[in-house]
Length: 271
Ligand code: ADE
Picture (cartoon, rainbow, N blue to C red):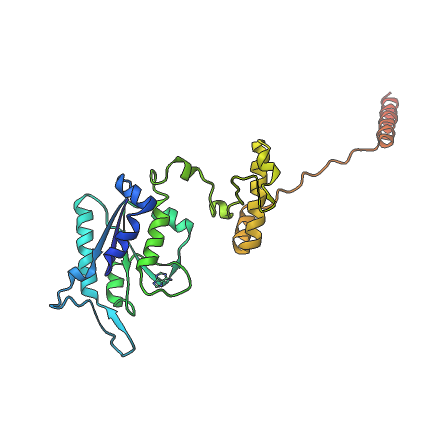
């Protein structure tokens, strides 16, 4: 999967994503990062990329032309390599809030373009022209789009096959099935007077799995009641099987007698 990031600070993106797991994955060729400097596409003699806002107001706005030309150059590279027109994510507090489901959906793409805004925003006309997805990382405002783009790229990358090694991907994780992860413990068995729950030392895998699910549910209910409600709607408690009422022995004998009596009667009447 190839990430193309339109930014005024490519060094910020490359510095961060080329370390740790995303760095290892790009060195192995599972993913690639291509941070492109929007300023390189400015036709202004001073390489200006921003200007005042029509109608007044504080702050500067990123202009349409450098962003559009930057995008067109990325798009051309992708199309020349036989790819399709990419999705373009504009990271903005005005977008839909990013979540694991979105990460899973975006991880299916071959190429993904991110547009990182700065200053007071971006000229609306270029957004209308190129953006396919408006995405936020939460209801707070940051100084620019680079950090949100990196957050999303990190979450998407780890879902690309090969990026995580077996141990890392075998990890049960929060947000699978809308449940948070259960509590985990490592050595020593006792620390600061706190003991590892005995069930985890029992070696009974079935019991351990049941305990973990129970803790996941408990934790989600307590910390993320919103997620718990979603989980509950998708996993309604199974209705208890109706117990068939056993007839009392006396009743059985009584009804047996009735049958015998009736059938006797019938037999007599038939005759
Ligand atoms: N740019 C500034 N704040 C942001 C946020 N919360 N999410 C995405 N992009 C942003």
